[in-house]
Image (cartoon, rainbow over all chains, first blue to last red; front, side, top):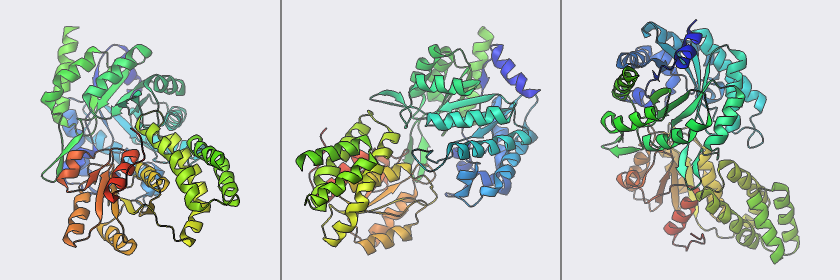
Length: 299
Length: 216
C-alpha cells in the first residue's frame, strides 16, 4: 500500500521533495483572473496534468492535487458547491495518469475561508463535514496522503486534521502559515509555532510544518523554532518571497538560484519534506532535488 | 458620563458586545449625543484595538470580537447619526476586487474605518470596475479602498485606478492585501498603500486631511 510506503520512507530517514506552486503555475499557463482554479481539472485537464508532470519530471517525490479550494464552502462562491467529489476525483485521476512508479499523490485541502463559531456562523460540525467530504473524495480518487495546508486558525486546522484522520486511513500532513512580526512567528490568528505543534500533534497529524508565507528566510526561522519541539517529520514549503509587479505581472523575487543556500539551510535544520508554495515552480524543485540527492549521498 | 465613556472604550477593547449595547443606551439616556458617544467611546476603543493589532499584541480573532462589539453599538447609533445629519470623517467605498473572494481583511479595514468615524460603503467581494465607479459617484466618495489576497487579482486594482483617472474623478485611492506592497501601489498609481487595518485608518485620515489620533 502506498500510504504505508509514504510514512515508511520518511521513517527510514529519506528526505522527500514535494512540488512547487499550483496556483501561480496555472496563471503562467493561461488561467484567467477570477475563475475557479479547481474547475480547471474538468475544463482544462491537459494543463493541470502538464503541471503535475513537470513537477514529477523535475524530481518531486510527491505532487499536490489542484484541490486547495475544492471544499463545499469555497466552491459555493463560484456556484460549484455540488461538485466537490467531481473536482477532487478528477484532480487525483489526472495525477495518476502521469505519476511515475514509487512517487506519491498528495490531496491538497485548504481552509474553508469561514469564520468558525463563536467568531462566525460556521459551526464546528459543519466544518468537520465540509473537510470530511473533501477528504473522502480525495481518497476515493486515489490520493496517498492528505495535506491540510495554509491554515491560520488552530481550531480549523484541528477540525480538518481530525476529519482527514477519522474518515480516511491516509497519513495526514498539516501546515500552518506564519509571519514574523513583533510577537515573533505567528499566524494571522495569533497561533505561535509551539501551539501549532502541540495542537496539530494532538489532532493526529503525522507530519507537521509550514507553508506559504513571506519567503525562505522566514521559513528558516520557523523550522529552527519547530525542529526542537517535535520528533515528527517536518515539512517546509515556502513562497518564493513577496511578489513584485513588473510590466503588469507579478514576479516572485526568490529564484531557484537565490534559494539554493536557503534550501540547503532548511535541510541542515532537519526538514524531512522540502518543497515550495506560491511563486515556486519546476525550476525550484530541480534545485531542491539536487540538494537532497547530494545530502543523501553524503549520508 | 466620563466614566461610562471610558467603560465603553474598554468594552470595545474587550469585545464585550452586551456591555457595549447597554452602555450605548445608558449614555443616550444620560443625554449624550450619538456623535459624542462615537467620538469619545467607540473611537478611542477601536484606536487601542488598532494599535494592539498593528503591534501583534492581538490578532484577527480579537479584532473580530471587538469589531462585533462596536457594530452592536453602531447599530443603535447609526440611525440617530443619520437623523441628526452628522457629518462623518469622510466617505469610503471599499471592496475586494474582481476575481477575488477573500474578505476577512477587507472587513476588518471597513470596521476600523467605521470605528474612526468614516461612512463606509462596503461593496463586498468580486467587485467589478463599474460597481466601484457607480458607488464612488453615487456616494460622492472621498476615498476608494481596494483589497486583494491573490497575485492573480491584484492587477485589477490598476484597471479601477486607470478608469477613475480616465473619468477625471477626484476620489483618492487606497490599496491593501497580502501580496500588495508600497512599490506595487506606486506602480499602479494608487494614492496610498496600507499594510494593515490600522495603517488604513491613518492613511485615510491623511487623504482627508485630518490629523491622526493614533499614537505610535
